Image 1: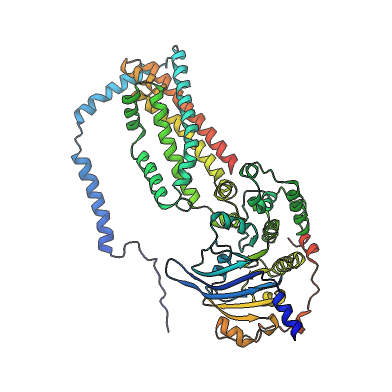
Image 2 (image 1 turned 90 degrees about the vertical axis):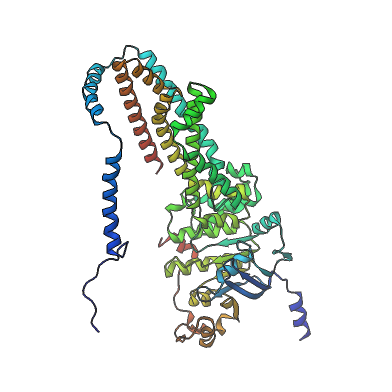
Length: 286
Length: 263
């Protein structure tokens, strides 16, 4: 048993959130002391009913929402006490993907992807769209990887939902993030595209060894793609464990009383459909 | 359980006495206010033949002094154009300060105050002020139209900034971009089409207004027009009026065309 304990102590703390609380100006307590420790590059799905604090939690981590109390440690750096400059530098290291994609609609796909490097270029170069050759090359590579090669000059508002989210993913990954925050990435997409997008996010994150926090309200999707599930209810962590250990009882505690037996998918009846690989999927169906 | 079979949309004012009472009051007030206005009907009737005389002396319009006419038109156009450009430039910082979702509260209030104050008075009143300060001529007109342009463009753009999609702003902020880059990548793309559209509309409005401010002595074709009325050169007046109509028409056509292109 001794070597095993040694191994756990050696594990690197990638993200450590301690007793994070958020009270909004209107008095609403969105989070009551949330703890979360991520020590390996895993996909952590955060599930919970509307108003459970999922969105607030994820936005507190890059301080798009200012936490009231608590601490957030990202690879050894305390986020909550950073000044404005420090916070901007920290945000450069945290990628974010949104429910409504949040692309700048009137800019081209390429400008949207390159905006992931905004923290690293001068204002003048940002204005002239003058990015280092390495960045431009990575942007082309990412677009190719997500199945959008050749679309770099298309305006973002001419893309379909799934395509937009692929651009959103590319923008976040352009940052070479140490952490990926993903807020309901599939809530505006159809079921098939949802699965493709989730698979793409998880693949890319695993490839790069980036830990992911993903808010998702589809329990089935969470179970299929996440390595770990955190259940929130009324700003508190109700469950933190493996997707396979989710039971009707746990879901009742997260969401409230209902018949959950149909929602629970056991791992063994999961090998249903041989869906196409993400790279093929990108070219088709949109 | 039986449900009702009739339904009427809820009325804006529920109480019928209040609802119809207000309509009756409005009608009474209209007749009372027209009745108590001091209108000298005798003088009005005397004016009718004079109007006929004036109109008959207007024809045919006299374009002989076209050099004077062209000088006035060019001056009006210059005033309108310069005022629009200066207004467009000053409106950028002012509208950013006057957008509640970007500016801190004190700055927002000051900027809104400036806009409201400069919109309080009609161009003609501002023009009278400037004529008193800088004297007759195009400078007074230029300053007047600039103030009007700044307040108009700022107000429209500030409202557009307040209505913009904050998700796009949030996304750019999340990449670690500072405020200036945020303006460049999240705000500017969202408001640029409207900014250009409003500015072109304002150029069109400035061409119309440049003819009006001239009447109080602030330069341009309006000043020439007033002079002809004073000297009873009605045929020349008509020539000027026709030119103004043509000018405003052309401005309108250009404005519509350009704003259509932006969409």
